[in-house]
Length: 164
Image (cartoon, rainbow, N blue to C red):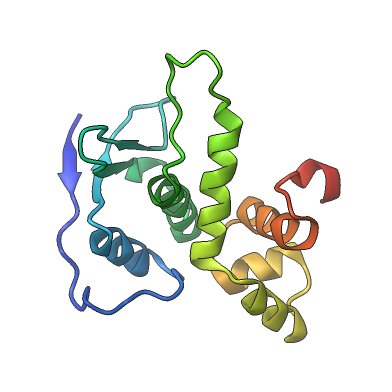
């Protein structure tokens, strides 16, 4: 197994408004001082994870590049891990009353906010992108992520199974 730290990106001084692609994803992580590593978790293992150092609040992200099915998949997995870091949504396996899904939902909501605003979604729909697949393609994300985005903006929750 091998860790590989991403290299600094050119033009990383520009403030990222919305994360639309993987270059902006890694630039944003660098701007936030999050260390991002590519790590082979092996077959059947994790696809990505993030951890926060308790002593100083430093955030680390690991992504398995061998498990990305597309650029959209890499973007969504990275956004989700950024969501954990930005919102501090981490769970403790030793805590008796820590609800894991609560932290996953906070991370997803932050990932949505980082990538697609309600106004951007409205604009895309007004342009004729009305199917989940076409919206996902338009925004460069996966269909499951687009479904969560739609649920969040239309229903105020991430319960995709109830609505889509």
